Length: 337
Image (tube, rainbow, N blue to C red; front, side, top):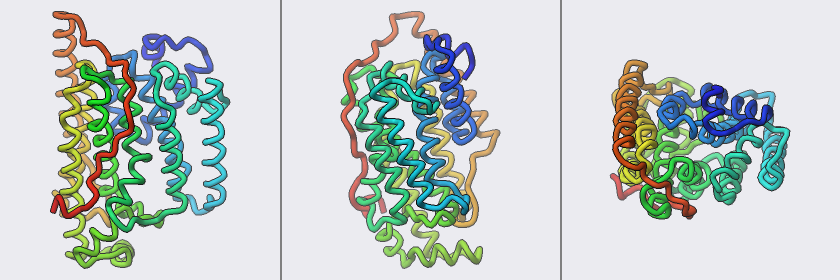
């Protein structure tokens, strides 16, 4: 975290400043796409976003490690310790764990509903036990805690120009859209973690299943049934992006360039998957540096324009109303075939 960002956010305590810096490093290392977009936010709001995402990254690292020396029992113990630290930190607004210290401070500053953090931790615990999902509805239940609540946590930080409850379903949908994109991009890596996030009913509709995915991963060979299932999953994901899109215009004008940039960059991952003919079982699809730079430049231009408009009139007020949880998923995949 830069001193400028911390100063702008009014964070003066040395330990707290270092905790926020730790979160920023986590976000920069693990979330290149969203880290780039975050740099388009007003400087005083970046620290809070790094705290929210830094905590999520830390929990993800616990459950997603590919280190075979870290068995399930050790991951569960580490996640339980983090959850205890989180509950204490939110209650006492203090913690020896940097990610919790920064998160607790952000939750207090922006009055974020603490139920969102409980839902997130429940989803992380699920990742230690659940390795696949029978239906899209089952996957949606998981994604409420793992992704939708991240969008809801962000709303008080981003601000809205409409009542927050109106923007909440779109924010939740955007969190889900981003995670569905990650699921599609990371099919192969998730198989290495013994997980399949593609719903079994979607796979079976195309004659595919988990064993076929594992065979493809192990042999490096492709199968048209897998390609067809991945193509449908991409279409499903694009449908969720359409649900999320109206929410961008509901955000405070100074926050829109950040979220629009993330929206375009994550959508670019879908484009890369399709361009590479759905070969994600064998390798990740990535957005080129040139493309990321072009999208970031457009975001910077939008930031400059928003600042000019803000000088010309009084800035839009931030909505103080709390956001209820949202569930943007449709229950069956056939709707987007």
